[in-house]
Length: 481
Image (cartoon, rainbow, N blue to C red; front, side, top):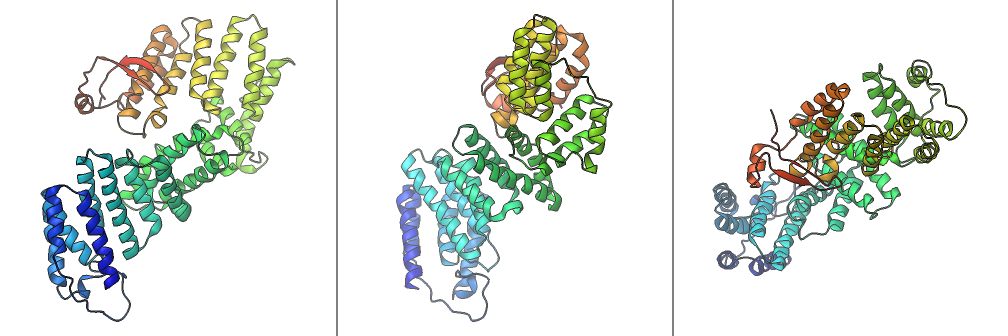
């Protein structure tokens, strides 16, 4: 009992030190409440923490749970805080099943954190939030879930005072424990942090490979085993995380053959009439070191070698470039294509292979800035050619996960310069109008809403510069339903 009292007293002292004068008075009043004698019950317990049934005044404490929740619903924060503090410190184990009081505590502390301008005092509120998570772990266990929840909260709500290293490590520990059974709310923010940290050189290929493959497994497992509302969340995840994870395909041996098989055989089944896709799937399977003699790849190999067969060029840099390209040695292919481009005087061929390099950087090496650079080089050699601008539009439209969290403002505004490029492509080249219109229609619904634009005191039609790697001035547009 003495040990419990000391723990409770220490935490209440921390709250006194960190809160506003009004809240401080309330906590001081709570300190005057005398501890009740506990009735120790025999037999198995659902929690090691004090429950209502352990207390002489357990029914009164249960009532205080109801009272603080009512104040919380009406956003009477100080009153909610006063009753929450007393009730939760007396019976953190509640009835042995209920856990919502810990979520409510985080909600209350977040309210005061958001009001606080002093960075040191904000840290004290974060200390209080850490106490809530630690107490919940003590009472109800489930370490991996709580690590993920804490990381999620730190990432979205408290990142101005919590280091990226701390947040990343919390996510990583949660994923390491649960592996393919990782909680759905962890996947998108952890994937974003993983990609950003790798791109900035803060983690090495080995660590990135470890977690990227765990995330791939988690998405597959979670999507296959989800129930009801969680399935909606996994659908949103599949629209974001895999697009970021695609960028790691540029690294040889990063993913196993199964990754390429599961992803690209589906693409093949949907695009059997397109040699562009057939050859793409063939190259990806080869890059993934899949055994192309296996029966499951027979149709891909057959169509690649027959329907989509292209006679190799004469011996020289161009043939070598195609050999590298078909073997999945993309960086070597780029060098050989450039060697050919520098030697030929044929403008058409220069433009053709500059554009092919752009597509390699887009599809295979996942380097969007270089893909744009070569697409523009190709376009400059061949006036009124719309395809390079279509590609640049696709680069921009695909940058939502790179430039933002996948959804919301930063991820949506990339559609504006993308649509600029689609419109310009069909303006200069009527032959691409059909595809350009298809792209415009597809991405118009992903633009920011009128409400989002208005909230930022912006106006439809005004100029706006989109940053990230795009760095282009465009026109503000609202989503069309």
